[in-house]
Image 1 (cartoon, rainbow, N blue to C red):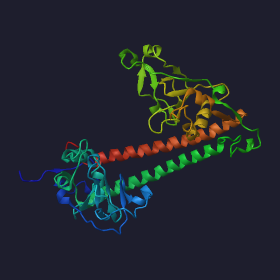
Image 2 (cartoon, rainbow, N blue to C red):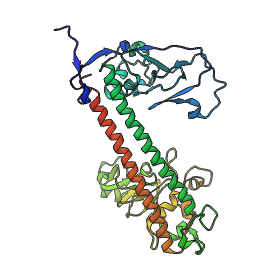
Image 3 (cartoon, one colour):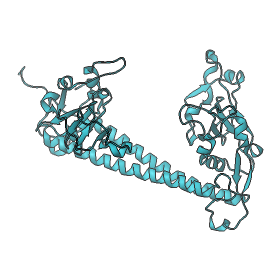
Image 4 (cartoon, rainbow, N blue to C red):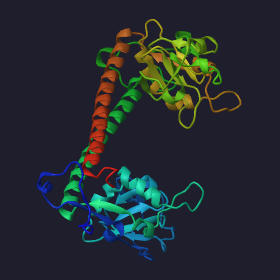
Length: 413
């Protein structure tokens, strides 16, 4: 009995396998061999992605004719390729077409007892990622490396081939649904972006390209510097060394939260003492925030407050003004990201300032009814985008929960 192999099963099994053979512990070296075919030059270059492998030409849009392919590795459908230096993050994918991958990858050829699609999902579960991390050895500081010899020594608990295929088909169909819903979301976002470009005048123009029928022959839009219509301010940051200034009840916002969104929650809070001993101010609900500077692509992004909150000095606050729905202001500025990023302070510094924002021309229909119509149209589209985004998040959460049930728990592995 001591020699009897230990059998383990996940919490959830499909009905036809519930009373079938138990899962068994095996070495990855018994389920995969290493494919090391090189010297082939007439196959397309492929690039590893999280959900599969696609032609590198489609990813990078570059000429690969000058690439020396002599040491690139051949892959065929059914293989699983992983990034040798990044496998501790689960950077692996099922191979869906024949081609070549960089020598930075390790190519695993499944044996008759292994289904590549199943293991491409299994390799992204936390128990296996922890194993990959443990068996990796750093070649360079802050890097981890997992050669096939070490990969082969890792134990996994897996079912027989028919059950592997059933699990893989389930998860792959869910991925296809997630991808389809993701494409719907991108179409909605692209439609909104295009519609905004039509419903608001472009830089230097007095009329938009598209107007609702009842306003088509209406007056030319008004144009004034933003600072003449709205009051603008900036915030401040309490002294970080003063513990009594932080952890209070006043919501405090940095540009990291400004991303063409409605801000309802914050990550940090300051105290009344912090508010009173800094340049921070509490801005009312409906205030539009513009990121004046920040890392990467942050500068020029906008958001609108759905709560009362203070901000740091990197945010320009555009306060609500009589006659203008804050949502219209937010939508108008959201479509001018590139234009605002092109502005700069004297001396060519890549940031915005209160003065530059106040001088920005602000375009608006003189008829409040047209402003309301534009706002209602785009807000209804935003509602569709929010609903679709929620649906996509729900599917992703469902997949995550399903994988936790379909594969053994960390304790079992």
